[in-house]
Image 1 (cartoon, helix red, strand yellow):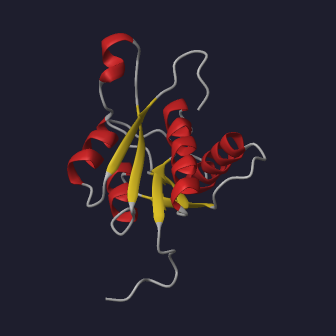
Image 2 (image 1 turned 90 degrees about the vertical axis):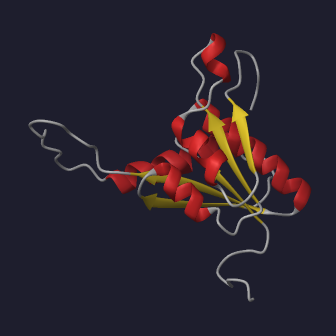
Length: 152
């Protein structure tokens, strides 16, 4: 078996959607990459919005560009000029869970955020995280959203 020369040997894939929990997941993945010598691949997925009934016209919206802005801003915010592990990003059209599973198929680790809403619900996984935990071919780490006053 030969390695894909376009991908580094050690990769940590992290799902980034711009939420606080995904930024915390990105920060954790960067820290882990620094410890292990891996490259972080921040992945953002996008889909055309679904509509029911009469479709609303969507004019002049570049969803891929919006997704690119989301992931690049998250990387900039989390790294904030610090000396960090190498961070790459990918923007892929498709269902977020499916995209993360595909992108992490040959990764060392998949990191996702947990969508919390406070109280008991905070302990629950969002649907994307849940799907990844059950179907990933590599280990999965779920990072909870930081509570008030915590840094990512």
